[in-house]
Structure formats: C-alpha cells, structure tokens
Amino acid sequence: MRTLVVLPTFNERENIEEVLQRVRASVPEAEVLVVDDASPDGTADAAEATAAELGRIGVIRRGGKGGLGSAYRHGFAHGMEAGFEIMVEMDSDLSHDPAALPALLAAVEQGADLSIGSRYVPGGAIPDWRWHRRLLSRWGNRYASVVLGLAVRDATSGYRAYRSEMLQRIDLASVHADGYAFQIEMAYRVVGEQGRVVEVPISFVDRIRGTSKMSGRIVVEALGLVTWWGLRDRILRRKKR
Ligand SMILES: Nc1nc2c(ncn2[C@@H]2O[C@H](COP(=O)(O)OP(=O)(O)OP(=O)(O)O)[C@@H](O)[C@H]2O)c(=O)[nH]1
Ligand SMILES: [Mg+2]
Image (cartoon, rainbow, N blue to C red; front, side):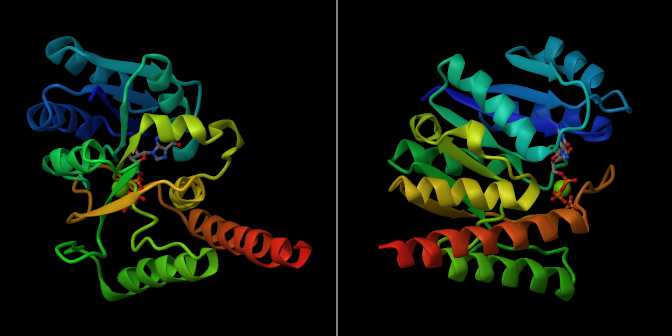
C-alpha cells in the first residue's frame, strides 16, 4: 500500500537527517513529508538538504509554531490529496525507532484501520523513564480508557499508522486538539467509526539531542478534553435517550 510517513518538526536540526536516513532504510518504498513550523534552528533547510540526497521526501514550511495536532492535520490533508493509502505519525526526535515501521504498516495491511505503537502491551517498554513519568502516562491512559470507554492501552502514543480511508471518514477539520489530546481524540474517533485498532509493542526511548516541546499545558489540555468528551458522550447523550 502507498505509504506516507509524516514527520512534524520544531527545532529538530540535530535529529532530522538521521531520522530521514533511518526511515528510508527501514521502509524504502515509503514517501516522507516533513512538516516544519518555521523552526528557528533551520530544521527545514537541513531536511531539504537530506531530501535532495535521498529523494521522495517533501518538506512543508509553515509560517509559525502551530502545534503537533495542526501539523499532522496539515500533512494528512496533503497525503490524502496525493492518494496515499497509509499515513504514519512519528516523532522526529528518534524516540520512535524507525525499525518498528514495518510492523506498524503490516498491521494496517492486514486489516487494521489504525495501528498504534504501544508501550503498554506485552513487549512494549519505556526504558528511560523514572517512576513519576511512568505513573503520569500510565494513569493518564487508564483515565482516558475508563472515561471514554476506549479499549486502547496506549491512546497517547504518537507513533502510529492510519488507513487513509479511515482518516477520510473522520472530519479532520473538526479535530482541534493538540499534543496528547490529539492522539486520544484520533483514536476515539476511529473507534467511533467502528474502526479496528491494533496495538503493536514499541520501546519508547528518550531523545538524546534537542529539547522537548512537551509541556504541562499539553497534559492539562488532555485531561480537560477527555473529561469533557466523556461527559458529553456518555452522560449528557444518555440522558437525552
Ligand atoms: N511542526 C511542529 N512540530 C512540533 C510542534 N511541537 C512539537 N513538534 C514535533 O513533534 C514531535 C514530538 O515533540 P516532543 O517535543 O519530542 O514531545 P514529546 O515526544 O511528547 O515529549 P518528550 O518525551 O519530552 O520528547 C517532535 O518531532 C517535535 O519536533 C509544533 O508546534 N509544530
Ligand atoms: Mg519526543
């Protein structure tokens, strides 16, 4: 199936060349689209230099930092227009090992509408995290799963592959969440469309180069939105019936 790997970047100059090389080595037939938000460190220039060397890599330059969710929506819209059948989400900081791509793609090729690189299925791991970060992520996922009735163990994972037909059924323009909430919302929408979700074990390693854009605001956004969606869909709607 024709595959597009979408890589959002904000200040990933030190990582982007290696990410692109390893993605190409892992899935040589896939095309790649870098969505850069005017990174001050010149990530887009570095990506274009590697693209000229490797070929079949596009670079979109957006005007300013618009957030992860918005970068993916932008990349997916391009991919759908170009007729790609599978669309991959992957961080550009090497936390997501490109070697896991064939397993993610195979799950979609075998019928999944969404395959998630999961830290919380047997074989999944987060070797670098201290206990408090593990606790926050694990319980955040448990909370989302209970409040939304979502049978997904790692709904916040940002390493995943979508069947494009499923993305077409979801109205991407109506997805406004960013960060972790974007990941949860997308999984929730796929399940809402009766889509099949498969979790493939991954090991998530901390970035070695560059700085994290994760923030407390993104965690609060996720908790707030999950609570709202749960109230809206499971309590308010039930009352109306
Ligand atoms: N285009 C774009 N990319 C972004 C933006 N924010 C983050 N990214 C990219 O999204 C990916 C994930 O961001 P990270 O900062 O690594 O966040 P994280 O992986 O949740 O957090 P860490 O575990 O601390 O690394 C990276 O490739 C970033 O460069 C943004 O506003 N626009
Ligand atoms: Mg990261």
